[in-house]
Image (cartoon, rainbow, N blue to C red; front, side, top):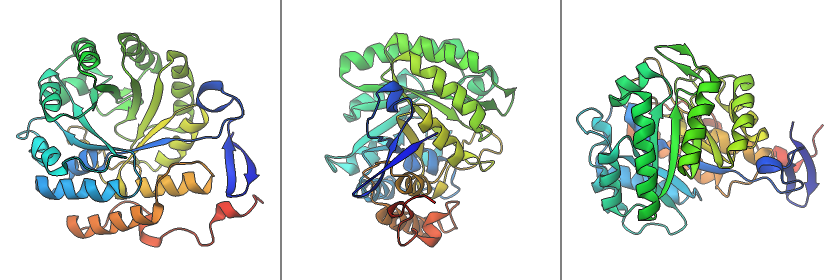
Length: 330
């Protein structure tokens, strides 16, 4: 469990085993990656123009988010919500120097497109199960791992940071339960190939803390930055994020307002809401560098743009005043 010690600004979170894989006594920080402009919008019925998607990213960048998954270099025919990725990046211009924009790719063609835009960070995604991976990107798992190896090598040459997302790490809509040993074996291959970061994704929101605890703990031996991506389909997303932190995850994905889902995963609903996650982290004394009040404002703006209520909770009611973290536990 997390242990808290008081300081002048509230509480610092200290992991009993040391944060980030065993460094004792260090202040705990986590990188929150905003995936709303990509994973969030890809499952929305309303399609936003590239200009409006760029405006969305700019508003998010002003909250203090250091990494934003802005676009997906996929077929605009298959996923019309993601059409015009290059236009989005052009509209962003130089942007806020403190924010790094990230693009999602599924194949080498996607990598070519990303590289040509000048983006300096990519995420290659594939699913851990054969059926899902075939439906999502028309490739076997082995073919996707082979593609990942090629892209990792190319990214290293091109000076592009490359993370890999292993989708359906906890469960598959077609094959059910996923063996964590299989997922870890895939992660090991990718780590050995030189991936900068490994992200385990609960694409359909079936994971529970017990599964997360085991997978994230075992992944620490890979010697890479380990992250987690949770959907809140069954209401376990925030609990899973907390356990992932306890076990050494240094990156957590989230989507503003809890929007999102995978168009090729039946029943998959949105991600954990960024503002809900940041509220939890902030009140636990864990540093994010993100302005929660500004996040809430962006969520409310997005609700108006999408013309429907969002799944998040905190944007509806705001933060707790005074802050819980300013008071001793108990």
